[in-house]
Amino acid sequence: ETGVTQTPRHLVMGMTNKKSLKCEQHLGHNAMYWYKQSAKKPLELMFVYSLEERVENNSVPSRFSPECPNSSHLFLHLHTLQPEDSALYLCASSPQTLNTGELFFGEGSRLTVL
Amino acid sequence: GENVEQHPSTLSVQEGDSAVIKCTYSDSASNYFPWYKQELGKRPQLIIDIRSNVGEKKDQRIAVTLNKTAKHFSLHITETQPEDSAVYFCAAPYSGGYNKLIFGAGTRLAVHP
Image (cartoon, rainbow over all chains, first blue to last red; front, side, top):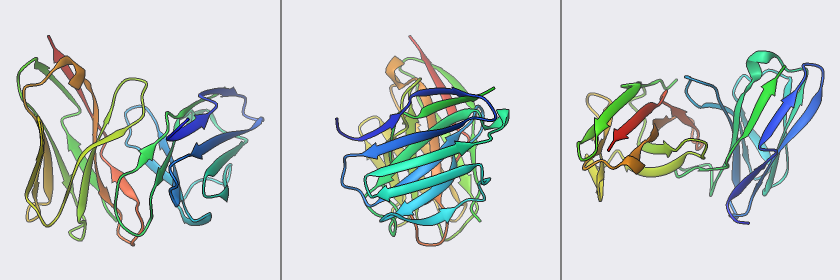
């Protein structure tokens, strides 16, 4: 499979659960991102990784914990979430971070927090 | 920091008509302005972008114009077709050297046959 793939596509969890979202890119890109997409709100940048190093944490609550073990994989670990965290979480990659360019998005993981 | 406003939030047109979506940004240092299209249940995909050294760029039925003085840019779709129905997002970069984008709130375009 090519491009950016995200699993799971749908996730329902309680507020005390621990779960993880996974993203994998097969494009040879150096940068990966997590975005949050809520209804009627703009896409919100959460985290940016460049060559496996976190370069941006956009004031995201600590109940969201990213992990980037290598340039092809990105995780978002979820713990003690709130119902308002229910949203579509989009992973993206780009060839590099130091110049503006195209973001390649995954299909997203739709999260529902009960 | 950068702030991007997008209008309208919804747009309904008849097939064959033109559609225009407008965005304004706040950071005068911004130099790259992409537009993404997100069909229902699908991922956002880049459809066109423009850099600050040009005022207009066209790709078949879509075009983007940029007015740096007024700090606004627009997406123009001509001869709209039902498959153009989607949510369109404009974006502009944060300052700071990394490929970080601030997105507008999106415009839901409906093209009626």
